[in-house]
Length: 84
Image (tube, rainbow, N blue to C red; front, side, top):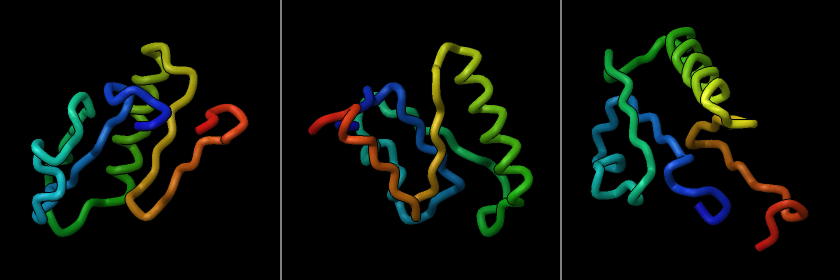
């Protein structure tokens, strides 16, 4: 959120049961979207298709770039373009 407005950040929750995605824990303005379905397993194909469709939607809406990362990935902006 240091480099992007909160309304440009989307959190996808697949029925988390540890309360980490409770709306009170999501920063104001960040979008929280929930995947419905089996809480123990989500077919990779389904998730991939859902994310691809959402990325396509965002790109058609005017975004120049859309980046997706799982919780075990770190996305670091290039400091030459985003100092600080």
